Amino acid sequence: MKQRILSGIQPSGVLHIGNYLGALKQWVELQETYDALFCIVDLHAITVKQDPKELRAKIRELAKLYIACGIGPKKSTIFVQSHVPAHTELGWILNTITKISELERMTQFKDKAGKNRAHVNAGLLCYPTLMAADILLYQTDLVPVGEDQTQHLELTRTLAKRFNTQFGEVFRIPEGYFPKAGARIMALDDPTVKMSKSGAPANYLALLDDEKTIRKKVARAVTDSGSEIKAAHDKPAMTNLLTITHLLSGESIADIEHRYRGKGYRELKQDLADRVVDFLAPIQQRTRNISDNEIETLLQEGAKRAREIASQTLTDVQRVLGLG
Ligand code: AMP
Ligand code: TRP
Image 1 (tube, rainbow, N blue to C red):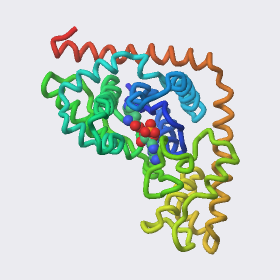
Image 2 (cartoon, helix red, strand yellow):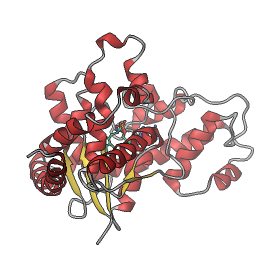
Image 3 (spheres, protein in one colour):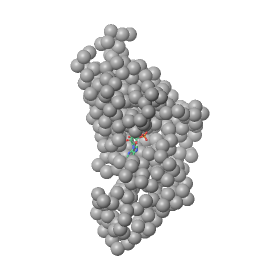
Image 4 (spheres, helix red, strand yellow):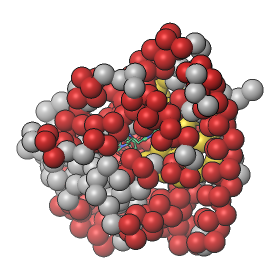
């Protein structure tokens, strides 16, 4: 039996090169050897206010992007979280064994909630228990994500162990899978913070940005003081641009540094812009070529398979709890 992987991305904001290099790129490789499920986590997205019409469109667009980036609809199961009600049910159940202090400690919660907690919605606080449900429902072995999800994964493992200890062995304990490089791609306009979906447009290179926009954003990317093209602690901007170049080309950072010896930032940026444009063109073309009908059918089939797996775990959970 193949081991199983599961991961997900929120259908909010714009999918960027950080999402691709930190998550999707690994998914594409892992789907060859694992039983793979990829989720569009729409219920996570509504922890922040969304426009319903836009959300609906974003869910379909993200499904198209999964495929355009190389997720094989025949190899992997692609589905929408809200199409499988077991996620919310297990999420609720996990809330009952989670301490508020464990949730309040999460960096992502602290970042998103800010200082004034009185008006923060409870969904934002309980976000990680829903994520734990996403993972545990499928008896997942491996969860390929970017570095920012480490804490959520650790909590998922804690909750799975706690549940198993209190009620009986129901859940497999999942492991995180992080890329060696690219687990944290930084913002173009500020290399000390991560590239983010909800950041200003100058922050990210979106997978659907047109050529002109990409060239402009790369040209304007913040650089370090000095002029040497080198990855180093005190050169966060260069480190980031070299990492992106490395991940898109496969060339080692040392080789890239060597090739640019005596050359300027401008040259590196121009080459990087060319590379990003060449890399994104076929992805954008494939996204346009997938019809809305194809996506609807695919998501229905995906949800059917996901529901079958999820309902088995949920039945076990209900049984040991005395429910159902
Ligand atoms: P999100 O954009 O928060 O929905 O994240 C979707 C996936 O992309 C998760 O696995 C994240 O860890 C990953 N990810 C998001 N931003 C970055 C980034 N700047 N660098 C690397 N991975 C990222
Ligand atoms: N919390 C993840 C993020 O913000 C998205 C996510 C939700 C996820 N459920 C998941 C990732 C399950 C992996 C597995 O990026």
